[in-house]
Image (cartoon, rainbow, N blue to C red; front, side, top):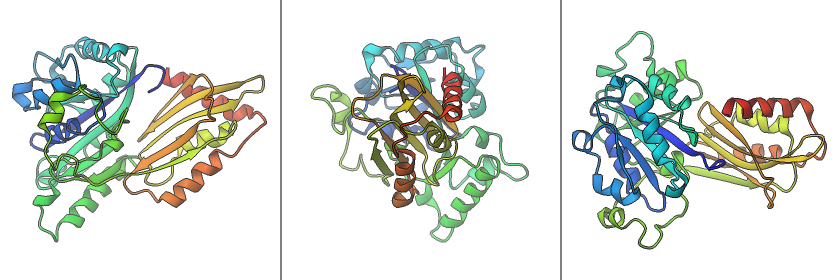
Length: 337
C-alpha cells in the first residue's frame, strides 16, 4: 500500500445482480485482510461470520442506503476507522445498496476526508439475464458506466449457451461507448479473481489470524477464472516520461498497474509508488527502493508478451533527468494528494 494508505473499492450493482455474492466470494479467499462497509448485515445478507473473521471491527452504516445519507461524514467515519494502521488492512470494500448511485459513491471515496484512503476503483456487477430489461433499456448508455472501472457480468451460467457471447459483447459495447478505459469481465456465482480488486499480503492465512473465515470455506471457495499478472524488475532510475506515458495509456487488457521506482530529478534521485486502476492514477513519493523497484500489470485479457515488452521499455535505465516528464509525474502526485 502507499504510505499507509488503503485502497477503497466501491462495489455496486442493481438489486439482485449478485454483488453480495461477489463480496462473499472475495471474503472467502485466503491471505487478505479485508475491511467491509455495508448498510445492514441482515438486509443485504453479507456473511457476518466471514467479515468478523477478516476484520476486528466491521462497520455497519446505519440509516439505510448510502444514497440516502444526508452528508458524507458517516462514510468518512467508517473509512477512518477501517484504515487505521493497527488493522493493517489490504483493502476496504464499500458494498453499496442496489439503488445507490455509483457516480456519487465514487466521488465520495475520491474526496473522502479520511486521510489514509486511496481510491481503489468501482466494481459494477451486472445481471447477465436481466440487465437489458432493468438498467440499460436503450437510448444513451446509463451514467453508471462512466464511474465503473471494472464491470463484472455475473450469472453468465444462467444464459442459454448461444446467448452468452452476444450479451457480453453488447455490455462491453455499451460500456466502452462512454468509458473506453473500463474493463468488462464475466463471472458465474460471483467468482471474481481477487487479484483484479486488491493485493493480498500473503497467499495463505496467517496462523490463527482468520479462523472464522477459514472454517467457513468449502472446497470450491477458490474457483474462479484467474487474471494474468506480468512483473518486471527495475535495475536503475527510469525515464519519468515513459513512466507517465504508461500510467496515462496502459497496455490493452491491463486493468491494474502498480510499481515502485526511482527517478532522477536533476538534483537527486527520488522514489515513487504508482497505482493505476481503470482511469484512476495514484502517485506518491516514497523512499527510493533498495532493490531497484518493479512494475506489475494485472488483467484478464492482457497479452503477457506484449505487456512485458511495454514494461521493459519503461524500465530501461535512464541515467539523465527528464524535466518535462518529471513535471508530468509531479502533477499526478499533486492530484493524488
